[in-house]
Amino acid sequence: MPLFKIIILAIIQGLAELLPVSSSAHVVVAERIMGLNASSPQMTLMLVMLHTGTMFAVIVYFWNQWRRTYFRSQGAFNLIAIRLIWATFLTGIVGLAAMKIAEKTLLKGVPHAQIEDLFNHLGLIAPALLAVGILILVAGLLPSRESDDREPSMAQSAWIGIVQGLCIPFRGFSRSGATISTGMLTGVTRERSETFSFALVILLTPLAVGKEVLRLVHAKHITTGFSLASAMVPGLTGMFFAFLAGLVALKWLSRWLEGGRWYFFGIYCIVASGVVFYLHHIGY
Image (cartoon, rainbow, N blue to C red; front, side, top):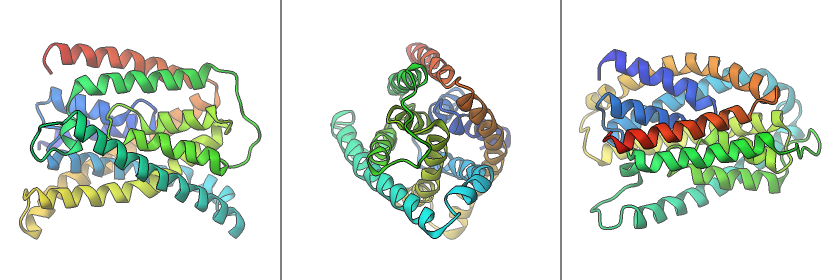
């Protein structure tokens, strides 16, 4: 893949992943416009490597805040670790179930169908963008239900994990938008919803990277260590640029979230869904 295309995808990923506007949807649309196959093993691996770049941006950006809260004592660490693991466990259960249902319904009759085969379907991305846009809009406009400044409870963590699981098979249903909005709607403060949502990224991203590397191997698109390295080099380049763009996006996100402008992202997603519907209609 040409270097300029990698950089374009990385910047789009870095900005859109950490803003609640669905990086996957934006990257897939960009891939389609540039004539790339978003469902191929190489491209799904590229997308996951870009997610890795934004994961490192999350670590750098939130590290001081996590150190003051999550790592201030052993008790505080144990409390948040249990909730993160609980949410991630439910994400896995719901995500796997959602993927199987999607494969049995949306891909019914397709030989050797995998959920990744849906990732370049703009006709599915558009309604997912619309759905998360409405969720963000509701969370941003409804009167605040914040109860206190504590970490999410087990019940609140469960809801966040369940909704996160629904994001896995559907490109366009923004993970950060859905999880932060769910936290807000269940009474978690804006700041705590944000930090909890992005802490979940640290658990999910390594699993996603491993899954896509295995998928690439099983698809027999690589047969030697050199081929694997060749597949990884473009991803590492993109990962670096996604990291830089991610830092910019996080500053923007925090300012708008804490400034009461969260619903603006919902409006954007709804408008973006209309654009994607149009692109699908004209044949992209």
